Length: 402
Image (cartoon, rainbow, N blue to C red; front, side):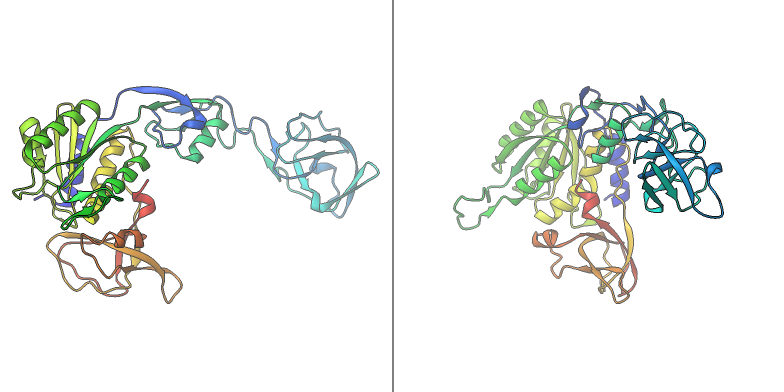
């Protein structure tokens, strides 16, 4: 059985990023992965500009001992370029407007009073005050985004500021999903004795969509070998990866493992973790195969910890590790387990006002309500107990679900 760290490293080593790229409008790039480094076509700002509404002045023209009255020689709104500043005058200027040559400071309008074409400057600024220098954000030709960046709203804005209306991105990763089990039915259908609703279908579809994948829904597959082989072949023909939940254990009705081995190869199927353990990886044709446990919490956790970084790497993303934080525990964990455990936890305010982590009372692998309640996962190392106040590693869902 592999450790969690060994399994993750093993998976990432085998990820093959998609090679095909396309060019799309920057406004449509949310969640896509940049295929090439992006360099700025312009400098930002392109000219020295005012950081405030106020008056552009030459500091040498101001009286350091008191107020200075200067004629207002011009008005410079944003989007226009003024004339060089005549000595002994001030220019009315607005935020974002280019600072005229000859001015070396901008005095905020709160320190000024204008009347009859003259302004009284009541404060002596320092040279350079309230001036944003040309290129201080980035210069033309500089790299502003690295290849492999998964584009968020902030990246889209930066790309636009750098002059890019279209962006080169990797094509979306196609993931085919199917679900095994004669006991699962769709919500809305009547439940017969022994049946349950197929929650994993909705959980995994949401997780895949949040990663920007194109999902191919292959539905529910009966618990038999031939049906499982057929759906694996169909999924491998249509997608880059095939994913399922359930059927990867060794029970008589668990056919996925045998089916994958019949039409492809299976190279990993046990990880020393809880919830989880039966995690399958392999290949069917040119497609990857990823088999998750059937229990809903186990499927969710193994997806977040293993499938998410693997699929991101297949999309061309370089930085796939979720950020984690060290927090004090607001719980007892008295049993030192043999496998690494990932407990569902919520953040609360501790006695000192700082956040601490508390656990959902039912940590069972079937308690899907624990995932909806929690803010993230607390990682509990093998062979260790935890006492209140002791530091624990917390991985927020905000990192794992995007």
